[in-house]
Length: 339
Image 1 (tube, rainbow, N blue to C red):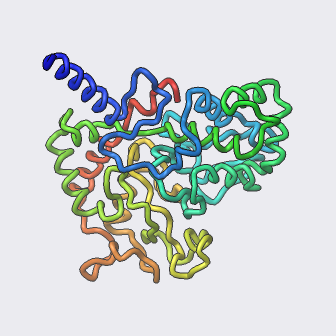
Image 2: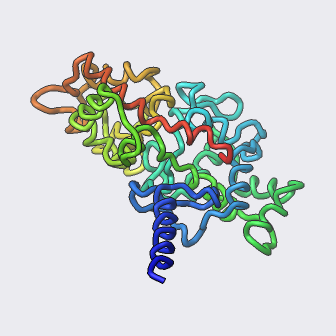
Image 3: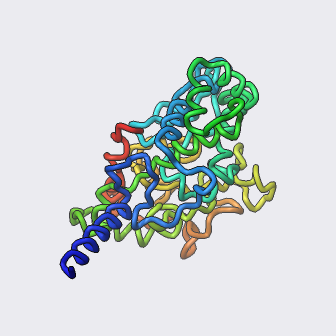
C-alpha cells in the first residue's frame, strides 16, 4: 500500500513539475505559467484560453479584415519568425503605405505585462488591439465596422458560436477576447538562458561573463526573468522629442522622452531597436549606451552615474554582453507550429 501511495505521489509531482515548467504536451492550448516566471497579470478568470478560442484569435490576428482596405493584419507588423516584431521597417507601415511614428514591438509574454505599447497607453491586453485598428496611420478602421464585417463573413459567426456559446451576433468584446486568448499563449520561456537558469543546460564561459556584466550594467532596467522592470525611461536618444513618449499619456513634462523598457527576450532577432527603430544592430545599441547618451531634463538616473553620461563599457565588454543576449533567443517559441 505504501509503495502504491508513493508511486502516485511521484506521478503527481512529475505532472506538477511538468506544468510548472510551462510544458503541457497533452494540451498545448492551455496557458501554463513557467515555474520561474511571476504570476500573470491577465484576468484569466474572465477569459480563459481554450483551443478554439486560441485558434479563433490566431485567425483574426492574421486576417487583414481588421484594416479599412483589407490590406493590413496584426501579423503584418508582428512577424512570428522574429518573435512577432517588425523587421522590415524602421517605422512600421500601415494602410496605404502610411508611415507610423514607432517600430512595432515584439509580442511575447503579454500575460505577464502590467501595461502595453511604447507609451503605456494600454492598461489591459484586451484593450490593446483597438489602438492599431482605430489608428488612422495603422489600420484606419472602427471597431463597429470590423464587427459588421465579421458578422457578414462566411466563417466567423459559426466560429464565434463554437468559442463563446449561443450569441446573437459577434461583438467587439468577444473579438478582443479571442485576440487576447491568442496573444496570452505566446509565452517565450525556453531559451538557452532559461535552460541554464533552471539548471538544465549550460552557457559558455564568455556567455557567463556577459551575463555577469549584464547584471552589473543593465539589469536595473532590464530586470528579472522578463528582462524588463516594466517602467518608463528616457534613455538619452534625443534632446528634442518629436514623439513625447509616456508624456502623451500622462500629459506631464516629467515623462517627456520616456518609453516603456522593452523586454530583451529574443532581442538578438528583433531588430531594428528602440521605439523608432533607429539602430539596426546590438552593437549600435551598446555603443549608444557606452558613448552616445544625450543629456536632457528627463534622462534616466541610471545613465547619469559618477558624473558621466551613459554606461561605462569597453568594446570587449559590449561584445560579451551581446554574446549573453544571444542566449535569450527562444527558438522553440518562434518555431512553435501552433503559433
